[in-house]
Image (cartoon, rainbow, N blue to C red; front, side, top):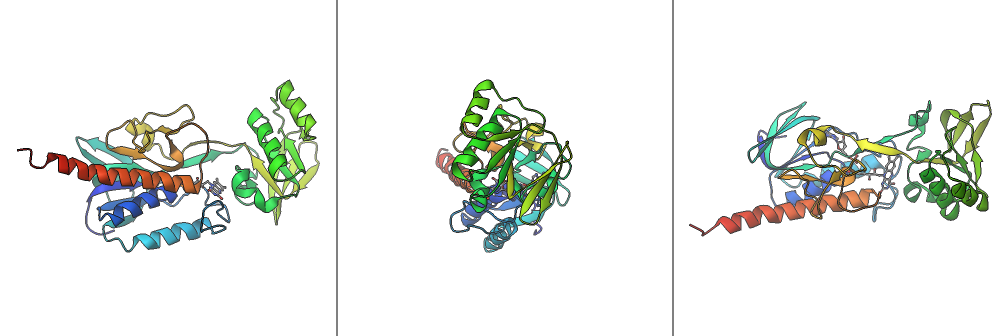
Length: 311
Ligand SMILES: Cc1cc2nc3c(=O)[nH]c(=O)nc-3n(C[C@H](O)[C@H](O)[C@H](O)COP(=O)(O)OP(=O)(O)OC[C@H]3O[C@@H](n4cnc5c(N)ncnc54)[C@H](O)[C@@H]3O)c2cc1C
């Protein structure tokens, strides 16, 4: 980062959403600082899918390519650091980081979410390798092979039925000792011949090209892949400290231009949502970053235009 410390826009979070916002603003020759501490949500995955023109690229490769593209916009500064506090002082936003402190007229939060996996030893090492939260993103590669869905919720049952319909007939539902399926759901699972394993999982092991579940009864079952119905939470506490209004699912409530309830603060990517539904992909994160940045750029200009010639 150069010596400048006041910017038009500070962006906290350099995943797909924050990077997309930085690119749009850099192209409009805005002075932007992008603060990131390199903990992207899909960092453990070996490939990114459902991204037009980039199918199968590594998550790291995607981020590096975007950061390289930003180098041609002189107004964009990259700061590798963690943003620790944000103060809104009148119309100025002051961001303290583990590197330099910066200020800006506007803030875009793009800090992402963290997946809350069931507490099973080893599950973290398999996540992103052969265990995933999203069959849309990582189902195709394991088509027609043995697959397990881990979870005892209605959502897990729905996911198992979806996986069986779209990905592989060979699917089992492992309730991990906590089944809460309604009688109707059990009938539906039975109707689709989806076997429920009620036993508790004591360990998950990532294996070359697969996944092994060690069960409480000392048996072990191997699958090509697994899916887990994971919950998530905000990666950064900054949204809470800023007092952004949240939705019931914990994401920041934003309008169609990604504006949060706090003046001059936008929120983009997985951490925020304007509409219902639970979908969060790299492409939707990029789209929200572009939307926020394009609106903000025009809004800054419109404000200047409106104040001209009035005196
Ligand atoms: C295992 C896995 C595989 C996935 N595979 C796919 C896929 O194939 N295709 C797809 O479309 N989607 C996939 N996803 C979803 C995808 O990862 C997200 O939708 C996407 O990363 C969201 O981008 P984002 O910019 O909102 O957040 P993130 O990518 O999570 O980026 C947030 C960034 O903010 C930074 N940050 C957070 N707090 C601070 C702070 N205080 N200071 C500085 N920096 C901070 C983080 O370090 C991180 O770099 C996958 C998710 C997982 C978990």
